[in-house]
Amino acid sequence: MEKEGAAEVLSRHLHLESRGADSDWYSLVAKEYTSRIEVGIVSKYGIEDVYMSIKEALKHAGRACSTEVKISWLDAERYEDRHLGEFDGILIPGGFGKRGMEGKIEAIRYARTEKIPLLGLCLGFQMSVVEYARHVLGWENATSAELGEGRHVIAILPEQQGVTDLGGTMRLGNYPITIKENTLAMQIYGQPVIVERHRHRYEVNPIYIPELEKAGLVFSGSWKNRMEICEVSDHPFFLATQFHPEFRSRPTRPSPPFIGFVKACSAVKSGGVNS
Image (tube, rainbow, N blue to C red):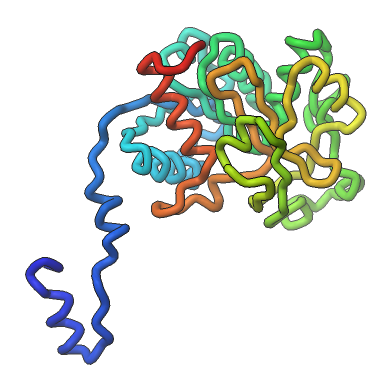
């Protein structure tokens, strides 16, 4: 219709300012896929719409990379390790509560040891730290304060102590994050300071950060003394964020972590990344 001048005719008829077509949008929707990947999302909620922003962020990144992204959902309490090996990448989304946590931790361990690209978001970031503490440092009782007794490598935010009314009382909204040089995070974002949206009540316990870093876990993003991004260097793509990058993703402005994740999944699938 645009090529036939329909927009121009309507603009004149309705006395509207004539504007050119959005060529960027047209290029986006006309773009053809040249590859295909399958991503497994290990979740605790059975309703996919709970993760709508993640689904859309994967679509945005896939379109930008000319890669079709097929999403499969795994129940965090019922899947088996053999199922994880079927995917080109594993994503651990956010959430609250104890249910399904051990399944998420096991999925993270599998992705880390089998060199499958992994993207962790919010709770996925926290469970990535717990998994590393348990299986690399050997702290078998490492856990989050949200989950019960043990060595709390994930602790409640100081300002959240004593808060019983959740919802709007969490650490919410945009916060700046400083990115460390020579890291995967810097490669993805390409700038020293970023802004991302948050929604959480827990953080990496500051007293354990030195030991985690000494054992090889890289905290590549931080805000003051709070850890915001973690990664594993000897891995095709292992990145987890305390924030929710999916909240800022748009069709014409895909989220950098999602773009990096999709690219890594494609590269590993095609044999372009050393694992």
